[in-house]
Image (cartoon, rainbow over all chains, first blue to last red; front, top):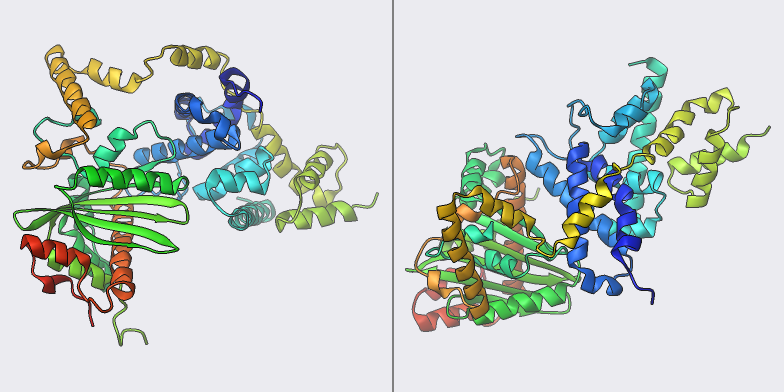
Length: 169
Length: 156
Length: 182
């Protein structure tokens, strides 16, 4: 079996981990912290790497848990993680630089208003191009549950998007 | 945070377990402090069921839960060993093993009161420890058991 | 050009029936310049997934993380925690660490037996009482279910649980307290 190394196998996951953490926390400073903590945790477990089926899935799982924990800690009173945060994204959010067009902004908002589970699944499928099997492993769900959540997420975005497209904001 | 543990204070089961497994990334940890427990009791009950729940919760001071979705048997045995090593403190309350599930409930009594209740379970490769502290007694456990029994005649 | 194939793919995409390869075809299609008007609204949806994948960490990340990993004392959190304490408390903290390690080594935590639990060390996972309520009530239900399962399946005849036998020896509880409903 091929030897797993931090530099070749863990470090290159950084941007993928960052995008997932950012999708959950919607704050880039937090997301970067989470990626660091994820890698430290993975590093501390280096004795077990060889036994893992997928180091990538393992890191994504840790990353998601850390991001959820942080979001919950940060969440203001009576504001559930699954509820849409109405706050504006922070100024340093890299999305801000990229997503200039109004429609892109709208899609971005609709995406981020999804419940965490749907959001993470959609991130992993539609942005990172992961298989249902991999996503199921990362989220500890069955493939069927992944599909159901993804279905709800895509339907919601489609409906909201078409509604706004047709009738305006 | 565990190192802030004072020298004269006792550690509950989960704090102890987490101290021994603090770098373990598979474990998911939840903690409710006595302060939060008070806040929870201040919230309004929306129905009778919640009212009943709150009456049960009023006996609790804190809750900690550790769970893992993988390597369940490994953690379960680890936790069991910890119970054995502290046998003079925990008193077995119930235990069963069957094809679906292994379960242990232990209580820690002081002056006739149950001040800590710990439940270990292993099911579908998942592991969970639920740890309550508070001012409980056998009536509490009785009420807790009844909470899940559907009331006869209630189901119309 | 016939767009039937794309329309079908798109329909299956919304139903979550497309494979990763087919989703790639859709993404490639919507990247083209010429898109028929009726499909145009979806262009940005697919464009968004591409843009969102361009998000990257800053260049200094590698240096930061390698610095943290190359220091074997990774317990950064605990160190910074100690740093925040006044020097006097630092000494106390060190004693506490030694003691708790000692306790861990001995595998016994009976020494704190008579005192209250160390609630100051508890950090709340939730800030919202409603969420906390849900978690506590789930946990209570789980315990309740186990007690019931035990009583229904394992304690039929010997109505009282093993626990009662144990505690009865110690004379601390009355057996009545955990008898079943029967």
